[in-house]
Length: 124
Length: 124
DNA sequence: TATTGACTTGGACTTCGTCCATCGTAGGAT
DNA sequence: ATCCTACGATGGACGAAGTCCAAGTCAATA
Image (cartoon, rainbow over the protein chains, first blue to last red):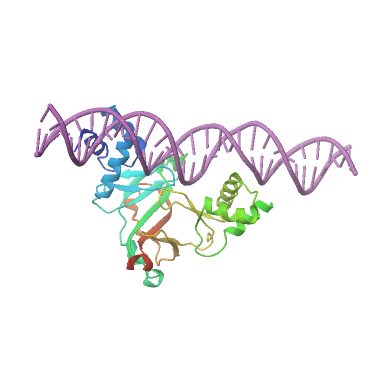
């Protein structure tokens, strides 16, 4: 556990945190100016491998990193401003996929992305 | 409707077709050697705007283009080889999100990605 | 002290996509 | 038939996001 890794882990802390790698780098640089981009990517990759952080690919642009890995949840994204909230739907999305639609796959998880306008964007 | 656009539209035809822009370019080049990358991107963008094709961002790498836009469906992706199948779950995923979890958003759609191992990858 | 190994660094490189100035061409106007 | 015009196509430059690699740093161990 080096100073660099600690800073990356600290930056990724809290609820509804969904930072891009560049944002993580920017905030880490505030605390530890000499940290490098490669180290941020390395550390994020390790955190993802360890299951401490979830990678969220919402739009084909930069991936986002979500530290809320221990409580299963899905994401609600504003189509206007891109804001992301963690949400907890009722029911198991996996149960909705009948075996006739599984094509022999061993289906392990279901990832749901809800999209819509947030209160701020809806009124504009 | 130019020859270039027709070729792009023809390449994107069929069930379970999920090509990247580069793959579309490669197949279009087979039929019309002088077609350019920019034209492929322009045409794909128009098809998406028209609602004829759906953009699928599965992994933060290249986007894929799915011509099966008129029948609502979700995607099942093999964690091993990346193969993609269109699937039709029962039930409406939107219904699983209680209003207490909507945070005032006007939720418009739910996109579900199932992940698991396909029969080929499971046996290896 | 010298060695070792793990971690970090910066920069080059790749991939994916967008932008822009220029060119070609089809259809209408003369 | 010829010229004009406007839209679409072209290709190359550019930019964002991410990966890779050789070299440097540092701490623990022998």
